[in-house]
Image 1: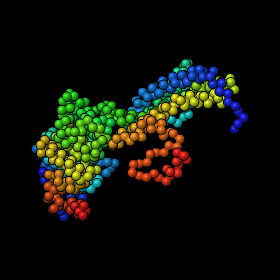
Image 2: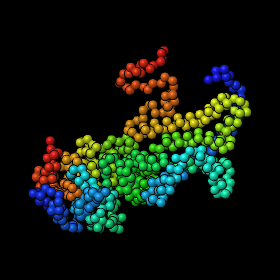
Image 3: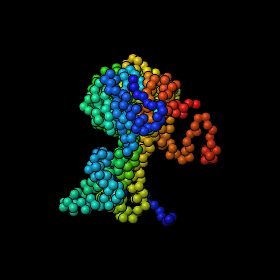
Length: 267
Length: 276
């Protein structure tokens, strides 16, 4: 570790507008990809669950291809190989959006499928006994529960996708990582620049992960009986991140020796 | 009531026993439901072997027997959740299944059959009112006002009127099961199939559910076929007790007779096994 290194925070000010431009592009690409995948993942999940083999197999093949190959290879393939194969050219941004959407759609489809298959069979049979049609069972019974159950997974996937967009810098897209790379070579200050890049990614991703944890707890609570415990709110989620946080003792039970030991001195 | 007879001296499940226990039920047009020679296999294992069963309106028949003896399969076949391999089913005077094939009449008459399951199958993301009204709204196309009125009536019927807008996750096991009955009633069934509906309930709560079914039988003339392992429930609820063994109904008698004087060795052994 180079302890003699003295940070120059002065480079951040001039770099910030360029980095924010990159962040804007990152957010733009992420939003389009996430929305498109959220929509396209559903028919793919339904096809993946189809009893008809000619529908199920291609869907399964698609999902496995995108799950079992690196995202960077997928990006490179769509960017370079696909235009060559089709003997055409695509705008760079479109190629990147296509590749990322194709990738995320495969994962979204699997998440939707897991959610739909988690609905107990007896709930579906009860709906059949009430003569609800397949469409109505899907629309009113399966999808709302599946979606509700998979919201945390979907949000996690989307946060991952937001971070994975940094790979597009390898293709020359002026996203946040690309801009950071350029600035670091221009200023010879990679520590300051890349720390700032990391902070910008964190500022966007952290609230999303916090919201995911909050939702997870809310859904867990609403799935069980009784009133939600006081610790299920967003404020509590933030509170858990405080240094020295200890979960409150259950009413009527004494504090455990471990809890006492872990209490910081002077607290 | 069926006229099945089994030779008590023949405890086997071979061909002789099979022929004696399955052929004596005559086609009966007065029965609300009548199955004849219904068979069903899963992965090469025959779970139902030409089961003959009938039930009249306003009657409660309880199916008992060891696990895997075919009780629930018969229920699921009657419900249309499993397609039989062979046999006929007559419902409300019409043939709905012939030689294992569903007939056109099934589409019209399946609404007369409701089913309540072992686990509480209320849809947890909806409140009680939505659970009750979604099917009649989508299937029968009833108006909102009509549905609300009927939902209130159905819940009153099962003693749950105060829970119209409760969330299902806030209800206890017995309450959920009563709401499940109310939900089935919303489709105006004439036959209720109950698959081990009290298995997860305490005896007092099970008694409440039994009270609901008895009331429906007496006041609405609804027929109930109940699969249970709870013999106290069976003895209180049943007009008829049907003992299943190896995919066949081996004995069909009123509970007082079946419990005190079982005619078949299988039922005798079954009762001995559950006696303390």
